[in-house]
Image (cartoon, rainbow, N blue to C red):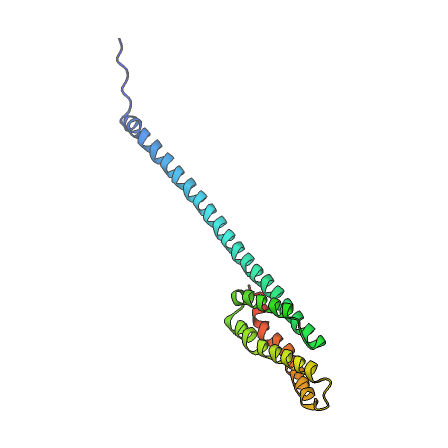
Length: 171
């Protein structure tokens, strides 16, 4: 038997550390791939969060706009007919319940305070007109009616100012 020739020393060392180098290389590649996938997933999650936030803003805007239109239609009808039915008042109050959650406290305070007072004053004036329409002393009621219409007309203008800041889509 012939003895096997001995490998050079550097080959012997390489042969001994080759599994360690292969394991370190595999671990490094694995860590790189995991990092890349993690970064991609984080980017996707960030974009989904941005999309959800934009959708929420749009949903709130849509709900605010629908509430604004309903309230403005109610005021318009009250202005043109001079009164509103008990059911229409209940619809307004129901819309107030929604407005409480979708508008700023400033808008809700306006709807529940100033505007509701003007609407109730108009309704009371209209009821007084019905009661005294056959009496000769109805001039004060006519004056109250004119004042109620003027107050409602002013509210019809003011509603734009009050709702304006809440009806803007901001990026």
